[in-house]
Length: 286
Image (cartoon, rainbow, N blue to C red; front, side, top):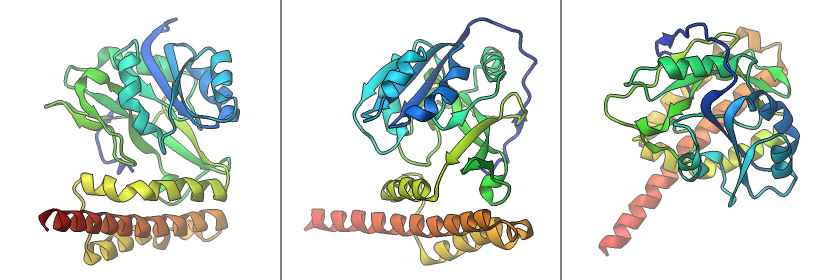
C-alpha cells in the first residue's frame, strides 16, 4: 500500500500517435464481464496481453474478440505470480500492468507514451495514481479514500527481478534505479473498481492472508507483540478514529473495521510464518 510521500513527476503534454510502444498486461480469472470496459481503452497499445489463469468462463474468448493476445497459464492465487513467465514474451521493454477490474482514462495511453519516451536512464518505472471504488462508488474515507500510487509501469530491463509475492511492490531494481510517482491528474488516474460485494472482498483477502506472512517476512518484517499493538493503533487512527466524516457512512465505517481486522490477521500470519521457519530450523539441527 502506498504512503504517497514520494516526489511527484509532471508529464509533458504528449503529442498524438497512432501507435504506443508499450505492452499492456492483464491477468484474468473468470472475469469475462469486466473485460470490455478494461480492454477497450487499452487496445490502442501496440500489444495487449491477457493472461488467462485457468478461467472456467469465457474470459479468453472475450479477450480474443476484443483483439488481445491471450496466453494460457495454470491457476495461481494472484496475478503477480504469472509475471516472470509473461513479461519476457512481451514485444516492448516498457510494460504497464492493469487489473481486469480497472478502467484507464481516455488520454492514459498518450501520457504513458510521453512518459516512457522522456524517462531518464536511471528510471526503472513509475507509480501510477489509482482511485478506489467499492460496490461501484468512490471510497471517500479510510486509507483507500485517497489517491494511491502503485508501481505498475516499468522498463523490464531496469528491474533485476519481478516480485511474485502479495502486496510487495514491483521487485528488486537494478542499482541506482528509481521509481517516482506520477501526478494524479485526470489523464492518469485509473479507476480501480476494487470489489462489487462484501463476499468478494472477504473471499479474496482470505486468499491473500495465506501468503501475507511469507511476503512480509521476505520484506524484512518480523513479528513482535509490541509491533502488532503499534501497527493497530496507527491503523485505527488512520482509518477510523480521526475520521469524523466516516460516521455518517455505514459502508465506509465497515470498511475501516475490515482494514483493522485484516491488519491484525496479517501480523498474526507473519507470526505463524516465523514460527514455521523456527520449527523447520530446529528440525534440521536434530
